[in-house]
Amino acid sequence: MKIISSFCNRSGSNMYICGPDKGGPAAIIDPAPCTESVVRSLAAHHYDIAAVLVTSPSAALEHSIRTISRIYPVRVFAGCDRIGEIECVDASGQSNIDVGDLSFSVIPVRPHSRFSIMYGIEEVFFTGLIIHAGTIGDTANEYAEELLVSLVKRTLGEHGEGSVLLPGVGPTTTLRAELNVNPYFRRQDGRARY
Image 1 (cartoon, one colour):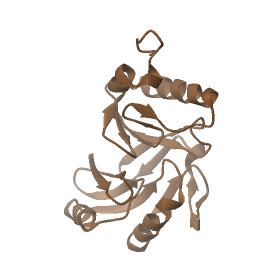
Image 2: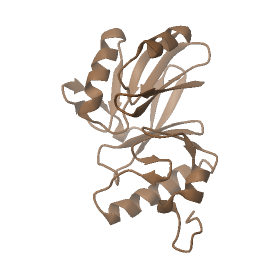
Image 3: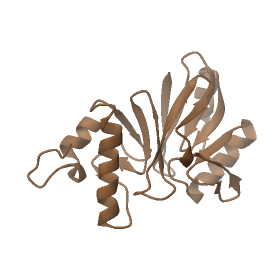
Image 4: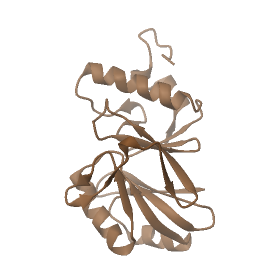
């Protein structure tokens, strides 16, 4: 499996392409506007985009999904049944999404938003705006914040502290790093709450 990351200057967000080592059906996670370098990378790796996985639906993704849909016959998976005019498969009730030989686990993250989902493959998790280096995404209130922290620790903790977190914004991080430096995962005495 290969994961290619691309930073979009215009939106300030990360987009990921996940596909098999030797080409074939692949997925784009949280698509940003496709640049020439992204298109070249898809061609160089012999990837056919079969799925778009959305961690947190937003109108900002609609244009990128439309562009990808004109090039590839994709299925769009999100925590809802549509993003603007784009029909989606509501993945929140599924445990896995298979894209060719790849199988992504589906982790609904209701404390962040009723439509938010993290996707996992092996020890890698695409977290979108849910958790990123040193912080967590916005929640409706402190109770939802505590639920989010608990869900992330419980769910990702099962996979070990070495789990890699690929956020929608900012740098790649690990669960270990977040447990040690992210204030949302630390107790008041400074020790990890894990």
